[in-house]
Image (tube, rainbow, N blue to C red):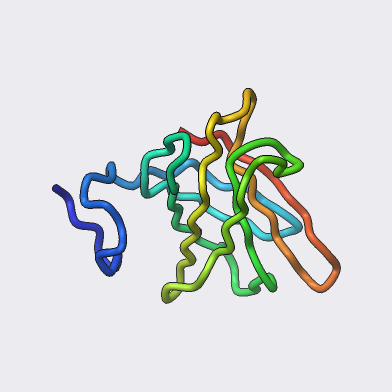
Amino acid sequence: MPNRAGDGGDHASTAPAAQSLGSVTVDGFEIEMIQTSAVEAGKEATYTLKLKGDKEPKAIRIWIGIESAKGSAKGKAHKHGKKMEAHCDVPDPIPAGAKLWVEVETDAGKTKGSLDYK
């Protein structure tokens, strides 16, 4: 089984190889989203976030589901060196049209964008 560097042993060793989902720009912050676990209904999904540029928001939160986040649990990203990591609980069942949502919080408020998850 592949071992992901820096995972601290907190993640299942059966997780698939990390895959980039692409970047999303939210409130001027470009964030590359890297999926580091499978997305399965009722389980936890993990992501690595890479911020482009030097500025950082107050907080970044993610969830899988619909835009309003109804029925989903948001996960707050935390720093790991120059990258961030976020965990979120995947709803069961996963709603139709669900996406991976990224919410950026700044002093001016909260803004969100989305990507397709795999």
